[in-house]
Length: 607
Ligand code: F6R
Image 1 (cartoon, helix red, strand yellow):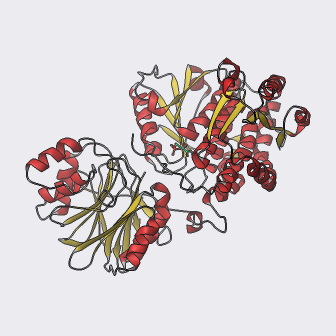
Image 2 (cartoon, rainbow, N blue to C red; image 1 turned 30 degrees about the horizontal axis):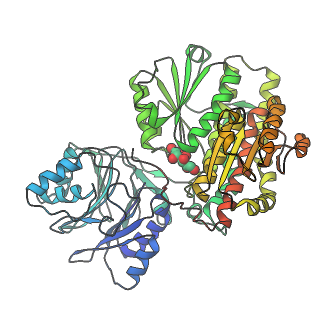
Image 3 (cartoon, rainbow, N blue to C red; image 1 turned 60 degrees about the vertical axis):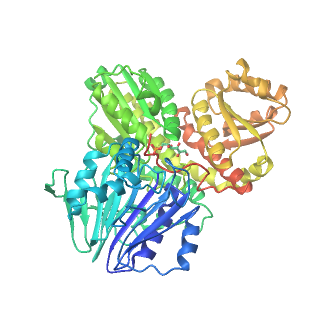
């Protein structure tokens, strides 16, 4: 949601904090600020708007010091403004705090603090943390932080500095990610590793209610009973280049282009001698046989992957699959028990609703398997087993390569489980593996034709309404195509099961309305042709997306995009790519801020 960086070390803090914030800006971009201890006072500089406003402000100020914290905000409590941006100082100016998450009991805490005569400067929930630190400070910052986290409720990742302890950076978290970066004569805290990877690749992930006391040459970890704990250092194996555009105009385009590699990195290590293996996961025939329902939990695009999975699992496994938006599942008194297989899908591994949904499912006795991109993230930690996608860090707010790698894990799981349940023949298994390995090179072919899609986007970027229609997995992919378009180009669009349109929504089709019709499914191809004719008869302009073998579609459509022929279950991996490119170029021609669409932020760690 928001981004946190903190530094203590031999170097000047300000440039390092700003550099870290640049890498974190995708997490929140409505205001930003830094606090630096200058040897005398904690000085805070903040600005509303993009990070550039803060950098401009700082270019006219000298802010020197070796200890500091920084924040880039995505507003939840209190509108975007300089006053509400972080770092937030306590009344005595002894503490400065940056916070991600939501302090749920802040109103009652704030009321009590006001009664004690403490003035609040912002409308944020976070300010109660700064004021409580002041109130409970007893000369020992660790004691004080422990007292405060015993009082606050909700989710938090906190970076704290204290004027009286000018060589110490404090970090503590609950249900919101925070890491410590281990350097040489310098150490860091950050909400994610992209912020610090240019300085160190050695990180330590904090668990809930663990406290890090970070000095320039040592780091100590405590639990909330003040017991010293030891933590493992994790070495990051990716490079700072992932947080850079490497010549592309936008991270989104770079990440679309990275999909073949990301998918290959995800599938290849799990296929040995033509067979699928998942490290640390054993799903025996007996275990799978006892499963009465598969329940998929996710949000947004990850939910759309789940939608594709529902069609594939039901077709291949003949088991009931329920797919739930995690924010609904958690409050719907779900029907889940020990024989339900819960699969959570999440790029960040930190999405608050998905995490809460897993907890709910586990409480009811289910085993949770998660498909996650960030190693050691909360969802990964709380699941019974994890299959990691190896997409690498995703910076653009709109997901592309994470979606594609999640989908490739779904295929592998489906084939793996179908094999265990003897639902797939030897020949069919081998043919699936062959197709799976083919996906990256087939995507390369689609990517090499991106100029055609750019030309189509140029024709349509002024559209006001777009409908995406499809049947079966084509409908599931339509959901993603439609979301991509609206989130980055702000064009209203809806995805509809093609057969459902005539039950009401077709009344919205008028002369020139763009309908993107997905017709890759062989069995339903003729049905789609009828649906295309229906919308054409009402004046729609139809852009079809189908497989190369269906060239005859040109007789009913106005414009066409083709993807290479591949098995029905895997075609979503191909058909989603032109839709990503189409949305990207539409947003590009509309001059939208593609990597940071309005009102959105990557990783929704609040409810
Ligand atoms: C859309 C998008 C979001 C995420 C959703 C879940 O492009 O990125 O819809 O898919 O917020 O996020 P994760 O996968 O991190 O749980």
